[in-house]
Image 1 (cartoon, helix red, strand yellow):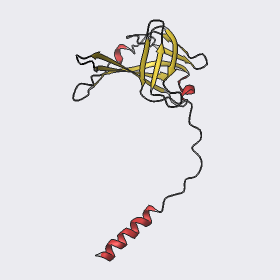
Image 2: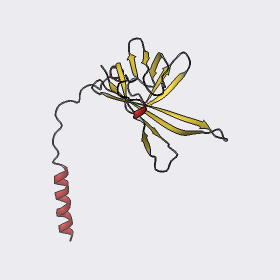
Image 3: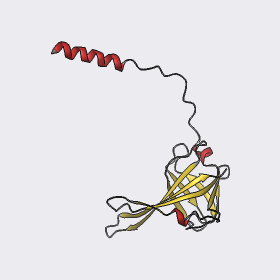
Image 4: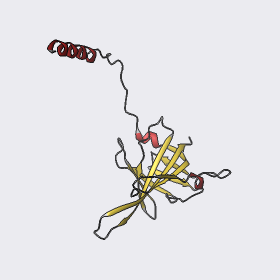
Length: 164
C-alpha cells in the first residue's frame, strides 16, 4: 500500500513539474484613460431589483434603442476631462455634459460626472481598455431607512458600444 501511495505521489509530482516555460512578455497595462476616450452609443439598458431573491434582471432596451431614432451618445475627452451628451430615447441619466473623473485612473471602478446641476456617481461594469468596444455604466437608486442605513432599491445598467 505504501509503495502504491509513493508511486502515485511521484507521478503527481512529475505531472505538476512538467509545466511549459512562460515565453514573452504581457506588455504594458492598457491605459483606462485612453480606453474611455471617444464617443459611446447606447446599445442596451437593464434594470435589476437587488432585494429580489432571484435577482432577476429585466432587459428594457426597447425604451432606449428604437429603430429610426438616434440613440443617446456620450463623448469623453481625456485632455480636458470634459464629457458631452447627445440625448436619445429613454431617460437621460447624464444631464447635458460637464467634467468627469475616475476614482482611480489606473484601476477605475467608479466614474464621477460633474454637471452644473449635480454630481453623478456611477459604477463601471468593467474598466475599458482601448481595444474594448463595450462600456457598462451602472447607477444605483436607493433610499434611507429609519435606522439611517442606505437601501439600494434598483440597479440600472446602461450598455454602450464604441461609436469611434
